[in-house]
Image (cartoon, rainbow, N blue to C red; front, side, top):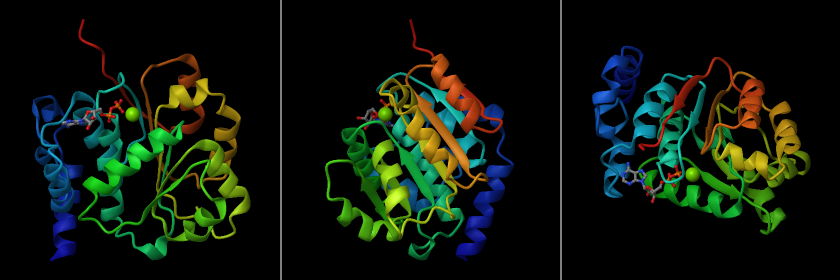
Length: 236
Ligand code: ADP
Ligand code: MG
């Protein structure tokens, strides 16, 4: 039953007519699982924003994405929805360890993403966790192997890669770089490069930023493979 349902969704994703995307308004217009739609709806997420409409279906199709859209345009759900869906499709369990990594520049942003994920992911069973500076490193380190979706700041993630013996990334399927422009502005390029160098290469990458700067393009060149470009321009 479940197997059949997921295969049906997978087929809809593969056969999705990309020409219809611009006419779609609601999350439920996309091939997304019932549990995720329920989590969205219960939090009053029904209509999609532009960046969500354009990113979600391409990400569901396992493309790498390079997306730029201004602050407040709804980038968080643009990556969280396909990320959760990917783990459902792959039937990830708590035995699988870290399957998705979300890197964001500040603790505050990491906490915000974590809160949105916890709310909309209520009907999914993944373990999600935060690794951010200023918290007890040992506490994080002891639990890190149970986390499927890890959200963190660059320095702290690298620290765990270096020092947490239980931190396994060999199962990683998806990497999200959120607010990539700000990550770079804050001087994290070297830290990012060290993280990227230690991730399995056959992963899916989603890079989101508010602005399309040269340093973002440069990062995209080394971290993305044949990305779909999405640039949501402001209405003037
Ligand atoms: P960004 O990361 O692009 O700055 P956020 O993802 O933080 O934007 O979203 C900005 C605000 O818009 C948040 O308060 C969020 O709850 C709200 N929001 C995002 N997507 C939707 C949606 N589809 N329907 C209603 N509100 C939304
Ligand atoms: Mg954001």
